[in-house]
Image (cartoon, rainbow, N blue to C red):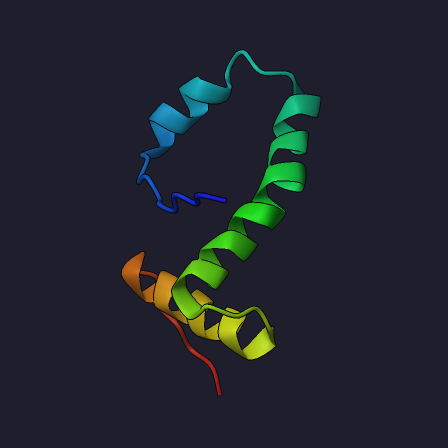
Length: 73
C-alpha cells in the first residue's frame, strides 16, 4: 500500500463554500467513514505503531504544528 499523508490548511469561507452544495447526510458521512482511517494512517506514518501512547504523541505534534494551544497535566 502506498500512503500519501498530508494536510491542507483551509480558511473557513472556502470550507463553507465547498460544503454549500453537499447534502447533510454526505457531510456527516465524510468524517465518519474517512476520518477514522485517515487519522490512523497519519499516526502510523509519524510513529510507526498505533497504540494510545503513539497516538497521543502524534496528536500533540499535530496540535503544535497547527498553532493550537495545548494545556494538560
